[in-house]
Amino acid sequence: MPTMNESIYETHTQLFTPQFYNNIKTLTEVRKMQKYGGHSRLTKSEFDKYLMILFTMMISGKERGSVQDNWSKNTKIRNQFIADEVGMSCREWEEIHSNVCYGHIKLLLDQPEEEIDTNLDGIESDEEESENSDYEYDEDDLEELNKIFNDHEEEVLSQNKPKETKVRNSVSRVQDFSNCTLFCDNYYGTIDVVEYIKSIGLEYVGTFRPSRLGKELSQNLEKLQLNQVVQYPVFKEVKLKKTTKQVLVKDVNVLQWQCKKQKTLTMIYTKSKFVKQPCQMQEFVSSRGIPREQPEIVRYYNNNYKGVDYVDQLTKNIKFPGRCTRWTTRMFIYFMQVILVNGFSLMKLLQPEYKEIKITDYVESIIDQMKINLTKYEIKATPRKIEGCNQPVVSPIKGPVIEAYKHYHVYTKVSAQCVGCKQCNSRYVCSCKGYHLCPGCYKTHISEQNDIRGYTHIYKK
Image: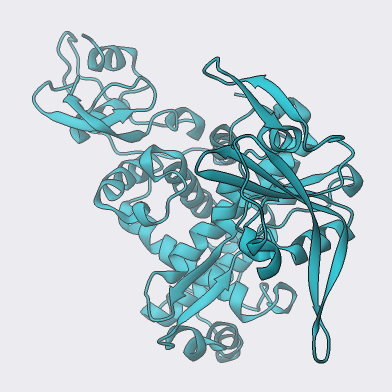
């Protein structure tokens, strides 16, 4: 797997910036102190382990890109396995998860980042933790921290109506906008959006809902025959004092194409230098080897829109009830997904050699980069006697983290016999080989992965 530049993560994903960690650390400590009456310190290594488990859950099995399934029973079982691998119990991970999610969302809702003091007196760095582990907060510190934490407590958590929060997908100006084209589907396609994008120098191509063209134009659209293409100019309604006026929008056109008998495709696009004749039919061969025809602008959209639906899923309006106990958890996962998608898009722009890489491989490369930052950890392993060996094998994992993370449990729909004990059926397979393993044999496999005899014994047919 190719290794991407770490500076891309620091600049665009905010996963390695000290400010991101310091803000999370401060508000997590406040959350812990107010809820449980004590204080605990979130170290950088614990936070990295927490993120590694979260990203692994995002890209493994059927929970990829899904928030609701992340808290199912099956995920909780796999969560236990992953937590065991990094030397962190499931209870510790869930406690960090709830505190981090709550602290991060409070950080976004309460105050801007520059107004939050993350270096308060009395909060030492990780290097001083061992010497001052019994530190107690002063009253002044508590008052200042409570201000950050409780500004909108009643406004956010005690409302009965859903609180609408818009998660926007932001793309930095990484190059000249005159050479960029924005591809969108009909969820965001409006005339105002197209005009704004055109005003900042971007070109726009996307599908469109006919109902947003105005009542008069949408009702007067002709019924087309099969494979017929029609192009319309775009008019915008401007409200005057007593009447409305139709104003022509320059360099913006609407195309209608009867692609099937019962389906009409409507697209809106700006004048593009990459497409000279948008309405001209273009022949091509589909993936199944069938010759087909499409208008040139439709063909241009289909070749470049990859990932539009997934990004729109992340940037939609998300409504969470204020009284819901896990609305912060769902919002935090959505924010993490938006960060990963933005970093993935910008990485493909900045490094053309990784243009064909998938987002799953990109997330795995982030996990590997975080593993390298960690040094060593230990997992308790009990001696196990293996058939065919004269001596019991004891092999606790002590080494670089990157060696242990080659193995994690993946849920599958197919149930098969466990290759280790051959006494029960399991729906879980190991990511390294793809063999079905029950929970007991999986832990044996993880504890003995550095021992060749134990490794070959488990997968011996």
